[in-house]
Image (cartoon, rainbow, N blue to C red; front, side, top):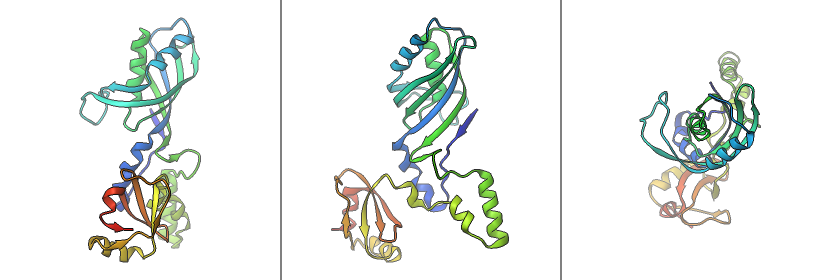
Length: 230
């Protein structure tokens, strides 16, 4: 069973989903070994070996082609282990697309016991975490009901966040014109970038925003310079 944070984008924001992949994800997984191990230390050492770039093949239930892939495991840690039931809990920080189910299978193979994932909770995806700003599907349903029946947008505005909220980890360049005007001049390659944050390098991914805080463009800074003349 998999639960936790899921970033859902609608309409124009769908094209920004990939912008969150570089930030990775944090998960907490419950695994079960098919046979008991001698010591907890052995599990910890096996987990240490499962860091860095890992070869993974998607599990049978995955909705993608089962070809060999490489994903990065940044950190992992054993939080708890029950010797009687041969179950344990691990926390991990990994690249988007990493298969935690496959990781648990590999852990069992390294321990010589066999193993599987029982439960998974994703507590961070990109910049979105369980700490703040989450909404349930019930919230979405209730917010829609309030808008349709009472014409009250307040609940809906808390549930459906503006697309700029998932771009806060990007360095910004700022435009003084309105978004409507900028969309026209971008096509004509004649718009002007007023100023930008310190630390920008040519190959960085940056977001161009108006002074109203509305995102106008996202992409490689060197490429955007062809459209925005400082």
